[in-house]
Image (tube, rainbow, N blue to C red; front, side):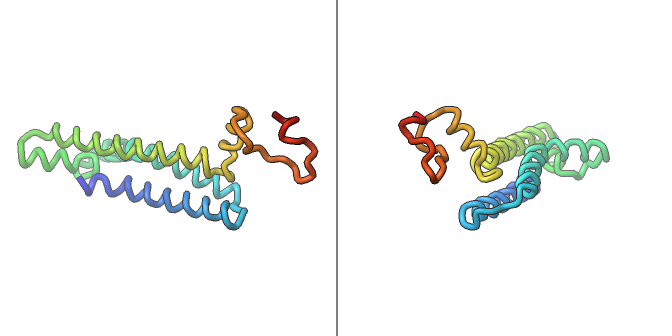
Length: 145
């Protein structure tokens, strides 16, 4: 199970590293290139689609030793039924995909382009004092409310 999960999990770990670099740059340096933010977002979307790519590549090359069929082959040899292996593979990959969706959501909402989506949500909802007010106090908080 670890062999089939290590590929997508390594992509997830790399995406978490990129998220951390972007977050730390925005928080302490107050600067991170927008192009790199977009590249990280696209990489996150590709980590979500990783299992789909595994299916396409293994089926296109008819590779019986690919990641999709590793557990199938193991259960076929040990129990004469590979269906359990395919089910376990799909279950593992589904859990990793859900984890990757959660990571990409957190990146897009709270880190991407210095949390622009979070700022838009705060402005639309009107929930609090999270608004940016100019330093010259053109508009007071009470007037804005």
